[in-house]
Image (cartoon, rainbow, N blue to C red; front, side, top):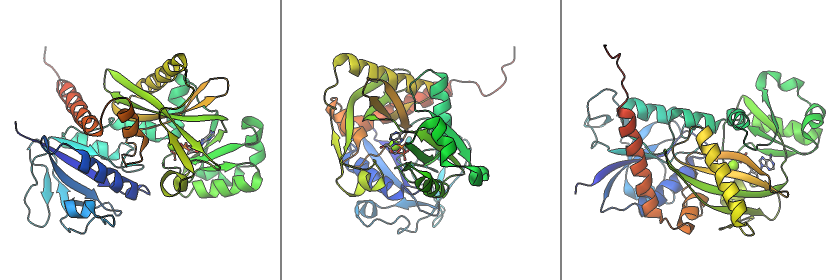
Length: 362
Ligand SMILES: Nc1ncnc2c1ncn2[C@@H]1O[C@H](COP(=O)(O)OP(=O)(O)O)[C@@H](O)[C@H]1O
Ligand SMILES: [Mg+2]
């Protein structure tokens, strides 16, 4: 059988650029090379697209753009869509794109829009699901509308920055709050605040990354995560738990030091509670218009209330990442997971291809 040609897209104009390279390296290593041919497409920090080499991706000091083979995209119905600027030749026709780009410009619908316009099937949620799930303000509105547990929060805008005071928010949300940029990830710009001084600092930090912030009440509870997979039929994995010795689950604790312990499966979860957790994750996935995959992160309070924190539509795929590990522990191996994601991308593409884009004459 002819091998399918997969375009693995990584890097991106985002603070999670390096995390994305590590995710891509893992996917590249794990993908079944008997079934799939992989073309590496790296997006540099400045947004340029390059055809990358295997050697560069596998180098732990990988810098996107070393190859200097810059790429351009050509829209339209022809099969050949991605062109090398050095030779003017098109790269091999891609059957599916697997973007493993995190955060703004990667996970927020902007890239997904390009793939849609290029008319190439791609892994992960559509433009709408990606955009809505990237924005913590819109995620909350949809969870609220769907009657799904969420932390109370107030959205604030940069043009109102000077009017914001800790005391005003404390009245509504309590003494301990979280301040977050609405569109970011990997805890970048997220702070816990307990007084006016830490609030001010947090606001200044978060506005570096977005013009819109969420001030949220602190949830006291366990931090659990699950992996969701599917289009119309949705599978939810078992849950894993993030346990912090101290502090919050921030960028350092996620990727650099060992302060965060990940326990899979999460302990002391009864079958009934697991069912409730899985049902909540599934409802959130559906309400947010997600397809393909997402990791759904929740808090579990002491009285067993499930509070959805956030979806991650292109979660980390590093060797320590929760998403692939959760599936491994649920009986789906890393290479099989990759294959399943590719199948889901094609199934959605074929389904949507049936829709008419022309007025139908009676
Ligand atoms: N409302 C909250 N209550 C308690 N902890 C929170 C809350 N919001 C965020 N956190 C902590 O901060 C971390 C990062 O916040 P999160 O909303 O997940 O942002 P990101 O999208 O950057 O991952 C969470 O994993 C959790 O440890
Ligand atoms: Mg998070």
